[in-house]
Image 1: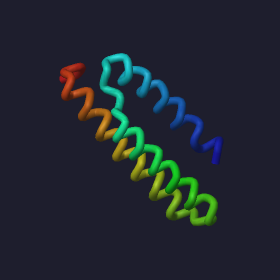
Image 2: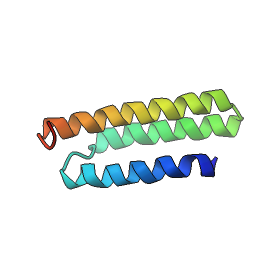
Image 3: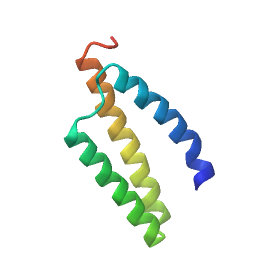
Length: 79
């Protein structure tokens, strides 16, 4: 699992640093939603439900990506 997720985390972390640099990182509501996603992912892993864990990770990545891109666009940091 760690081997599979490490490249994704590295890329995500780099993107989050760039998004934060333009002031478009999520607010407290977004942070709470991301943490809820993480809790759901961990719960699926603890239950040993691989399909649910994979779906939860994909949902988290897509949803958070969309929110971050919207934040960047709202601030005019990219066009």
